[in-house]
Image (cartoon, rainbow, N blue to C red; front, side):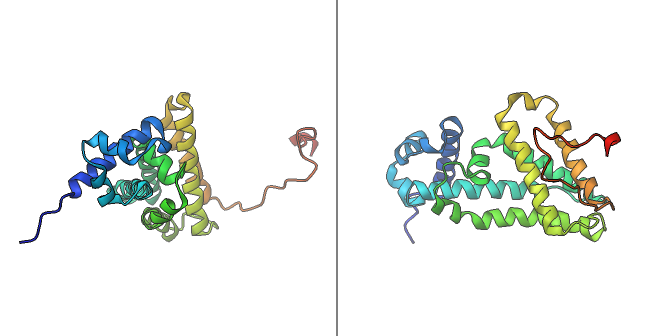
Length: 219
């Protein structure tokens, strides 16, 4: 019979939970091997055995962020309306960012994340992106993207979600009817993809703070 593992998955989860709490209160810079171990009531030896160093812990937190996001989106039951399903995925992104602000800053924003830690959770980020891409593929198959290339639509939707979440975490007043604000912004983007008018908006070099564009009646 083999020796039981001294530090098991239960300890790893407890350390990750503690690290997320510390990062939420004081930021990633406040994480240290001893502080996280003390929060759980275990030893630094257990920490090193499971994560190797602080960089390994941060990498696992980033992986956790995208694993949770992937699970949130994958758990949404599909309906007959691919636009509604994509909207629900955007609102799931909001829930994730609100419920796990520290993981959002680490995984999505990469705030104070060492480069080697960020590289370690690229695979988890790609899995989450694949879930989003699958939803946009359904819009493409239903001819709801108009002339917009699918990968551009994926990038635009992702960028809007991240922008909304970042603004909401920085501006407490944004929480006023935020569900409606998110829905309106995401719906406007999704509907806009289906528009047939692909004419570019002309911006001339002489338009600026001192030279506003002409009024409609002056054009």
